[in-house]
Length: 193
Ligand SMILES: Cc1cc2nc3c(=O)[nH]c(=O)nc-3n(C[C@H](O)[C@H](O)[C@H](O)COP(=O)(O)O)c2cc1C
Image (cartoon, rainbow, N blue to C red; front, top):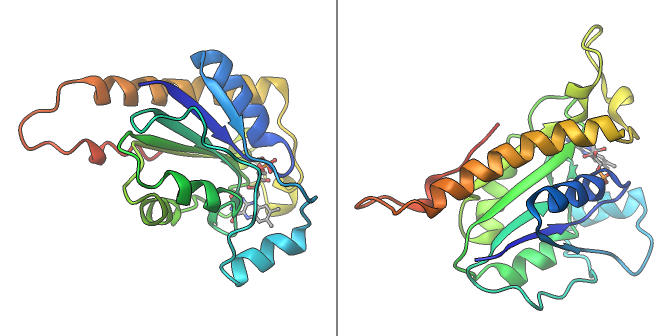
């Protein structure tokens, strides 16, 4: 079972984090890209019309039992739409997957992510980490959407977030590799922070 990181990013934050986590885990990394430059309007159109946008992504080299770690921004409470195609292609796999995001978080946790992932991937994630730019900013006054919008992660932020993510991923892999006890379902290892 290999660990493979698959990331999409609109403004660079999740790609920067994916790259750092890949180095920390010594994992292969695949970027999902789009041939046409995305506009903010296209984000809302995708969501409104339930579109699955065309992306540049080939699952070559991914084996059914590999541990996949997806990284993407959260848009309007959901997983960024460019991951939809990728989820469709990878849904029938047997191996576990994790979902990690550095999102804005000014309005609190993105509570619907777990359900969406379970629906699109056909099983719950082994780990789900919804990390927030709002938590990286001074807390007094409480950060608002204007403070988090357009924020670019600093090298120190990436280090902090990588540390948090790697800790969760190591724990998840450890649990997954432990021999399951009778009747235990490994799908229920969801680690929601
Ligand atoms: C159209 C749009 C909608 C967004 N919706 C949310 C949201 O519902 N929840 C959230 O926490 N962040 C939201 N964000 C903030 C992004 O998730 C955040 O800026 C993220 O770090 C961007 O990642 P990227 O640089 O990898 O594209 C939204 C951003 C955009 C552009």
